[in-house]
Image (cartoon, rainbow, N blue to C red; front, side, top):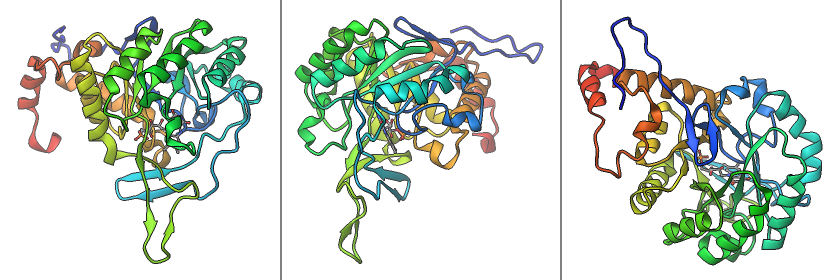
Length: 334
Ligand SMILES: Cc1cc2nc3c(=O)[nH]c(=O)nc-3n(C[C@H](O)[C@H](O)[C@H](O)COP(=O)(O)O)c2cc1C
């Protein structure tokens, strides 16, 4: 780790992020499905400042999603059953992609399908429109499809088949994985062997909410996916365990991140980049704020190159300079 020059009070933090073949200016992204289909957040901040913008999962064809209500706010969490509603890649590219290009966003397109063939179709349709698109995130883990057996990332074999089908697209591929399985490492390994640059984890945690006064389910889709601060420990552990088992794997960490501290913890657990999702619902500037807080925190901790700390926790290492700085901090600052 490089020790910062503190003498002149100046401190610069190198935020450059390498996700296998994908190089980004910084590690902070939006999370799929939590900030619209395109450049909606540019009403609040300059999207080009983020490492990347991940758009809502889109399929080859338009898809209506689940009946309402689709969102249920809970204590420290949110439950959703949006069900992958979307316009289909053709309409998405016409109506949303130009705005993203205009905003200067480095766009990562999340794609989904109900079959391996539909994933292949989605990537073929996307392949002709790659200007401004830096990578594809393959959502093999949506919990909001009718048959839970359709969660491809509960099976290493099914995940491998999907990534192989998408591979011809020729841009970096990330597989978005589910926490709702005990075989995350096998699934991640299969995704990478099949051609993914890395994995994004985690998608939402399967959940449900019932109103006891009316005995009715809170979501129109029945169950749904839990997100927000409540799932942060689940995400953190999933990332930590995967990095411990496969040290060379590239992970994008997501789940309950709403501050620079959350982001740094996720990177220490093993994520090379992070995504901000549910936090954006209450604070549309959350992804940019998290980036600012992360940068500031690194400066305070003496981390001059952020990529140096990725996976420190599974390696059982300590940030020596960080410990020194922390001991200097006042209690109220911590
Ligand atoms: C309303 C909503 C819609 C989502 N839609 C998608 C989606 O289309 N594709 C996807 O891969 N993940 C989707 N997710 C999951 C998020 O990208 C993220 O993995 C998850 O919410 C955990 O992160 P968070 O706690 O920061 O929200 C959605 C989450 C929410 C809350």
